[in-house]
Length: 443
Image 1: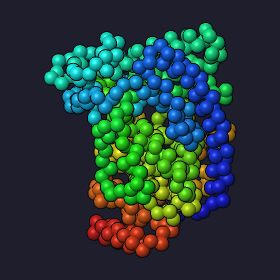
Image 2 (image 1 turned 30 degrees about the vertical axis):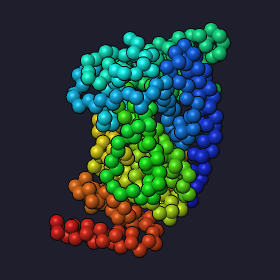
Image 3 (image 1 turned 60 degrees about the vertical axis):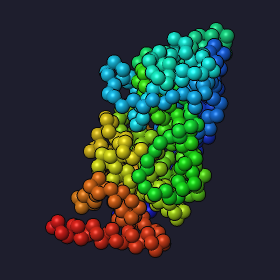
Image 4 (image 1 turned 180 degrees about the vertical axis):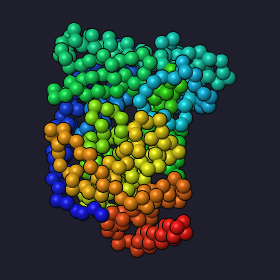
């Protein structure tokens, strides 16, 4: 179905040629942000300046189409001494705070133990709320933390500008809002404005992140997955409640993928560019995001764990495509660490209109591997037979199909199955026979 085309490497080279410049832009904007955060720390030492930003720099370099980055500000607190009290009730509308991040399970209170004078600086009214309990004296309130951090950031910006530490036009706080769980700052990189979404975070080493990937560990996961979740990060979920954050674990997994041989990360970068050029509607934020594509990549490295899966660029891209097509048809993209969480749920993206665009690329990539600097739009959609689309529904009907053998079968249909492992070939053949029999019985 899909012919190998010489444009693959040329298209990728153009994308990768921008990475160095994006890293420089990130570092320049980050330096301005650090000046502000250092002043925040000087005014209130309860907020730490975290200088280890390699993970964020990696993500910003890889994503050539989005100019937003999440930056966490850790709280200076003995987080392991806090009492994590799970919250199971429904949040009232007044308690909810609008934000654009994905909700993970585990909304909770972070309580201060009654005995613990070392936490005294966190019992002040600006961050604390008293509550009757046999174990805790009250809770650290994320809504108060956000309000305090916002006020400190505004004061720090004013100070830095008066001291000529920040030049006019280098930073804008116009997007700051009272009712958000992140604090966006627009910072100039000298080339374009980058939006840093500031998020306060509580990092615990005890009670590591509870996750369930509903499947056996394979590939790089076997040695690495448990390492990246040894700390549990909590970020604001609402005014009173915290929640697990998978931001750092996912970035750590992405960093591990970057050490693998082959075209794993390159396939992500290429599809991100294709998404920007052809799949997302101009002027709209709706549609597939880099976060969605990151999750598709992690599932791809999970299912396709052999080095021979990633030896050539086009084959690597198709390993992401078969998973993405399946997720679009079923309107279900499971979170890698929390598969019960659907990242497409609640999204404004029109998945029905996205599918033919992605399918069109999968069937005829040669037509898309070119840059349209004039902004011309490509609207031709080449569709496969309905039988192929019906196959993509199988994982939603039976979770046993959410596995390597099923996706190997899809790769084979795109003529991208170049695997020599006899066990995988046998498993793929078995599921192919099973689906053929299923079609025969239905007809």
